Image (tube, helix red, strand yellow):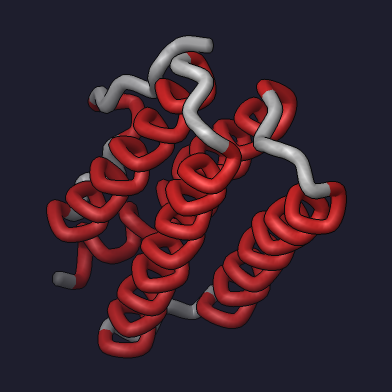
Length: 133
């Protein structure tokens, strides 16, 4: 599986959010490479945990900006954040319960999980914040 490469297409034109997204993509790429390199299940689980924890922090960061700048769609965006975290935690739980490692299919899920949110919900948020910050 290929790395997710940062580019203008993923930019939301808000530097501090773009910085967070770059970090999340870096962790995703570490996970992807670790799977290809056949790292231990414990190591893969640790990288997934880091990705989820950083994502939770990032969502909190976005939500603070939404509150500060009066983003009208805050409740919908927060609900999407909750759904995304729920999906990632369900994946984490499934892996733990089955006592197995992350699969390529799981990585594909996480790739969509990251990029679709950036390209849709975060793009709208970025357009708004770019005007009011």
